[in-house]
Every structure is written in C-alpha cells, then in structure tokens.
Length: 147
Image (tube, rainbow, N blue to C red; front, side):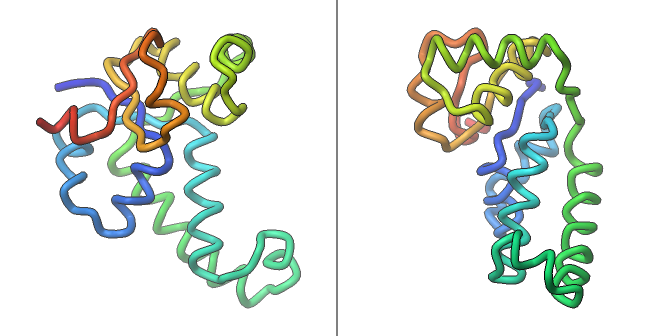
C-alpha cells in the first residue's frame, strides 16, 4: 500500500466516472491539501452551474444548487482522502519549488505538501508536474501506481 498525494485532475476524473481510478483510492492511502479541494470545488461549481464564480455569488438559487453538489464532493473527500495541512513550512518549500522548477503556485503547494509528508508518490495528469524527474517525491500518472 503506497501513500499518494492526489492532484485535483485525478479527483475530477474520478468524479467524472473514470472507475479505473477507484483502486487508487481503495488500495492506497490517498491525501490532498486545501489547494486540491479548492481546485476541485471550483471546477465542480463551473460544471454544475455554467457560471463563473463571481456571477454565482449574485445568484442565490444557483449558489444553493452548487452548495448541494459541493456537499456531496466534501463527503467524497472525507470518505476516500486524508487532508494534509498547509503550514508555514509548506509555503516556504512551495516558494523554493516555484523558483527551482518554474512552477505555478498551486502546483508548488501540492508538491510541497507531498514532499514534507514524505509520501511515496504524487499522482497527477499535469504535464508541468510530470516533467519533474528530479523531485523528492516521484510524480507519476495514477496508472503507474495501479500497475
């Protein structure tokens, strides 16, 4: 059983019905941080309502519909993922990763969380992360863990 940081794109594919990913969550210890949760919630809101988040705030009916869907997503996270905190150390490491690897802030925070927790893998479909062969945590597509 491996310990795996799961990027938002992996969770979104599971939500979209890619059942082949289910064993990643049932057979391994899977983790996320607040960045992953935020990215998943953002994409779910967009998909559910078709509205930009700024416009969603102006529509109580759509906000309520999105809230119900987000509650289901929160329950999914609680049932298959373990949260990792974002601490000052995480932020400091993320700054270093942004400079060293030219990463965007969210990607750097996700990788920093995986590194500091000393996880076995970071599972992602993100090409910006997958190109990093020298990271402290192996960055792989989920299928490599499931083989």
